Amino acid sequence: MIEINDLTKYYGDLCALDHVSLTIEKGKILGLLGPNGAGKTTAMRILTGYLSPTSGTVVAKGLSISDKMLEIKKMIGYLPESAPLYQDMLVFDYLSYVAEIRGLGREEMISRIKELSEICGLREVMHRSIHELSKGYKQRVGLAHAMMSDPEILVLDEPTSGLDPNQIVEIRDIIRKIGREKTVILSTHILSEVEATCDRVVIINRGRIVADGSTEELRKSSESEYFLSMKLRGADERKAMEILSAVGGVRETLVEDRAGGDLSLRLLCGTSEDIREKIYRRIRETDWVLLEYRQESKSLEKIFRELTKEN
Amino acid sequence: MSAGNIACIFKREFKVYFISPIAYVVIAIFLVLSGWFFFSTFFLYNQAQLRDFFSLLPIILAFIVPTVTMRLFSEEFSVGSYEVLVTLPVTSREIIAGKFLAATAFVAIMMAPTLSYAITTASMGDLDWGPVAGGYIGSIFLGGAFGAIGIFASSLTRNQIIAFIVGMVICVALTLIDKLLFFLPESLLGFLQYMGADYHFQNIARGILDSRDILYFASLIFIALYGAHLVVEGKK
Image (cartoon, rainbow over all chains, first blue to last red; front, side, top):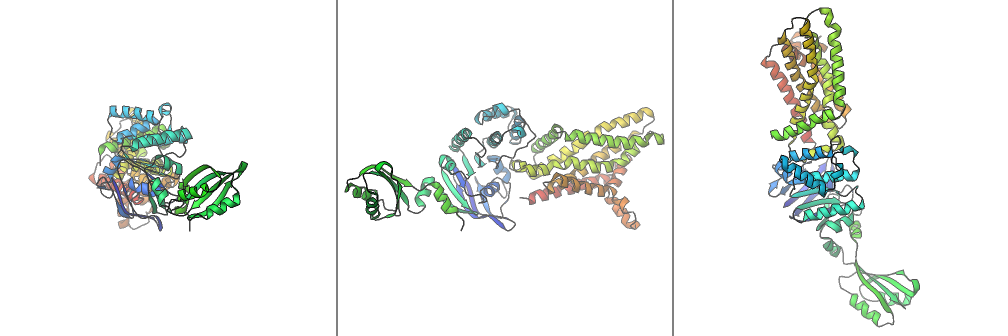
């Protein structure tokens, strides 16, 4: 659907994107993740035709941004960061204006605006001026703006910023629904958002792609470390540490809690081998009671921090 | 370029002028200024003509038109709505053309009430309508040229005040260039006069539609709009 090849963008001598290559399939929700200033917005701006790249190519559905930008713009709906809309227009007037530029006919326009006002919850603010709206409502108008022509590609720059928790859930539902048939690219720095909505995550740092895959794949690939948490009854702390640390593959043993005679432990396992069974057998040899036993993978936050930390 | 897109941008820009109070303030200032300059000397000459009105019009427009155009790009840059606009399926040429037509149409609307001066004058004496028609046609050309220069100035910056000052300085310079540099040798002065907007405007305002004057304004409009196009494309 979209092929980004060796894309580079310089602002003066500041490098915002550094030879980025990426292929985006149809019908997937792609999350661009990265710290502030990583190049997420720049990448989106190039794709939507606001900026032109210093070098490299972007081809969407066989059309290149260098010569067929107008055609590409027709199939892209774009919501820029913080939805900078015309402040002095009424919501309805604004949406009709967008519909007209998008080439919708008169009747089509009315029904589409009605439909979008339902989807984005704009019914009560339709005849208010945009500058009177709260940030959340502006964001929703921006979303309606992006979805006006039912575009094949939806590019959303931080779509849920400024929304309250209920609205966030609603917007995520909308995005997921759209993502079944259309291609959605969204940027965010909220990690739970990526886990909740995206099929694929691309982590960008300093203009380079540092990770690419589903959230599951990212967890698996980021070293072969995981945690085993357990709760033991009737175990002596020192003895337990001694026995468990001796099992091959355990890097570290951490005591979490020892309230009421129950000992909570966390083992950091630094091996690709599954040592759950070995540990279970070792515990069975003692007279301790195993109350809880659980494998935990590293959180996305930790992966994110490892990949994007300053060095 | 698609006429539909240009019409769409034109409509929005034109409507926005009248949503905000700026339009009414600008029109009021223009009418007060031009009315005062016109009628303060009108009865002294005891002649039924609008020559004084049209002779002062270029300098008044040189100050007024940049206030009309200063927001066209600068405001979009500072609010960020420019990003929304260019990512819609329109080209920057269509955007510039739409905004230019809106500014020119606004100048025409602003000029319309001054037709009452002509009607008043005609009721007092025998008015020669030729120069009056020429004056109004010329003022549309002049308004368009100053509008294009104002759009160019607006495309340079996100600050509306700077856009106004740059636009105004260029427009005033074009109006007064031959009068300011009167001390230069005759041969050079002829050339400068040809560069001046006032000279060509006064030609048309005499009631003579010469292709040279029309070509002058057309090329001025083209150069300014092309400049704006280059600036806007350069920002990508």
